[in-house]
Length: 144
Image (cartoon, rainbow, N blue to C red; front, side):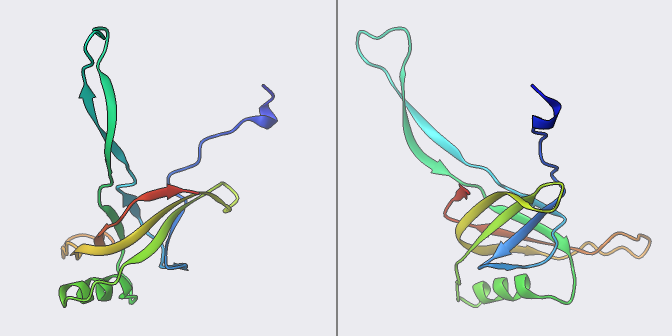
């Protein structure tokens, strides 16, 4: 294999978060990009070597977005609406960038809304960035 054809993995530090087609700011961390399909074992009479494994439901954990607090209150206001009883589901994506800053992987999520918001831990003796965290439930992931 020639070195010019080598496909290096993408760095986990160059990404964007998009909600309803708008990039909503730089995030420090995104977690919960997972999918897991449950299986049910079925033993068939006469087949003693292995059980059959039948697909059941696929589950997606909450997406957890962390970013430094700025004067942009979009995430807090979205969660505040949920608290007030107005659930506004939004589609979005986490976009992984290549070395040149071009989109390389696009992981789309659908029907998301916030179910938890967490403000920063404030300490007078530190100099860390004030981080807000929001958890989103969603209806699934799709890699584009």
